[in-house]
Amino acid sequence: MHTKYLKRIIAFVILLSMLFTTVAMAIPYGQAKKLIRNGYSWENVEKYVQGKGIMKGFPDGKFYENLNVKRADAIIMIDRAFKLSALVDLINRDYKDIFDDVDESEYYFDAVYIAKLIGITKGRGNNNFHPKQSVTIEEVILLIERAMEKSKYFEFDDDIDLRENYKDMVEKNKDLKDFATRGEIAAMLYYVLTGSKYDGEPENEYDLKEITRTIEEDEVLAFDHEYGEKDSIIESIEDLVDDLEYVQFTKPLNKDNNFLYDEYDEDSRSNSFVTNSDKYYVDPNRRQMDLSEVTIVPKKGGVLEIEYMAYDDEGDSYKGLIKITVEDVYNDLDDIEFTGHENTPIKFIISKFKEVFKKEFEYTSDDEISLELPDKKFGTLYFDENNDGKLGNTEKIEAKNSFKLKQMARIYFYPAADFVDEKDPAVIEYTVEDKDDNFYEGKINIKVSALLDKLTIDEDDDFGEEVKDHLDEFDDYVFETIKFEKLDEDDDFDLNFENKTSSLFEIEFYITHLEDVVFNPGSDFDGATLKYTVTTDDGLEFTGLVTVEVDD
Image (cartoon, rainbow, N blue to C red; front, side, top):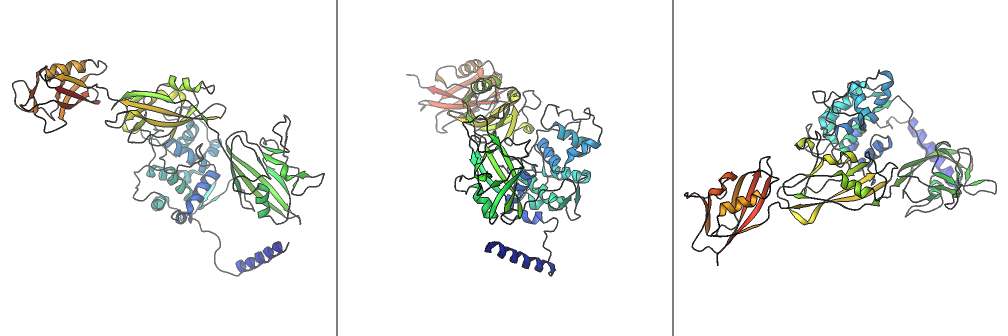
């Protein structure tokens, strides 16, 4: 009790100082951009954009602020940030007015449709939006500026100038043409929105510090149980409220509650939910509900929010929030194996995914598969946006991304130049979410082997004919040119065209001329191995070895 009176005296002194001082106590508009520079402020940015529902984390609980953002996802973030979807009631919808490359079945369709309709985005010409391409910093700034102009729910301060101040919110040495990351877009939205007055629904304000816990999907958490190194939830509330007497829960509402139980028994089929009208006491008598009997039983992964009013022994009330992050429990899947050759795109095969999935769950073609990026020393992933088998730079998958099962046949792994390793394959980790919101983890192993087997011939054999006959065995490819290299410059031999003296090493020539190539050993020749590179009619390159042995 003495503690409470002391707090009230301190509060009264602070109130008097506020009445008689000329110092402004509120953070001025636009202050966010200054906070971005400070190391501790990133936590504020991440908490803000996730708390407002502007951005979401990944299934593993991480934010991945360094990942580039697709144009479609940037539109979704801006739609959420500026409440653009609320404007559709004011607009006569016409679903014909949409970009040619934005399909109505895609998760981003509504956000892109609204953005186009109200003039937030105009695409990139020819009525195409290019939703899968990475968005640039300049494009993000332009989108935000237009959203600020169109928004009917915010009053923005005149000092906000994103185009002038964006350098404070992006990585050093980046300019407008560089791709924007999740963290940079979060910082820009934080700067703009914390320097504004929102005239829509009032914000929720809490008297008490937020209580947070993280549990796994298959765990339950009773209010009187300690979890890890943290106190029980009851102890955490008591730390915030002196002489806590009881708690009433205001959210989830009775009609929405499916996880907050009273006197939960895992062996019982008829458990009771906590209700908004009941009071749950710290030290109950026989007729009172017991706060220690309140238990959180999550049904799936995500964030559970519990709003409550805490009452002390004098009847004073304090509003608080408990956030429970429920981490998904992943089920392991069998590895998927793909094989291919160096310098050749390796196409994913849907049936291999289905074969693995059906062992664990009932899959659908719309199941979401989230792919991690492989190490660049192994290769790069591509999404064949035009479904034409031709992979351009704009089709590189540059950030962790999700695709539907039915789209996996358009994913390619392109090995890094000359990368060959059959023993240690390139590994791509992925997660898949089924129709029941269950998550599974798996790995894709890609073995890259050399296309051309090692060729061994005798020094008296017809060198050019032997090499040409060897290449003709690979009838799936049309080889156009070839170039030979010495592996040891001291080897005593040369390659020439018949009746010519000019060396052919490091000279690229057409395969049709192989028949005229002659191997000329020197007087000290004791065997050697040559490297050669062939190029196909569609630009693929393969390397091989030819060993020339000395006749006995």
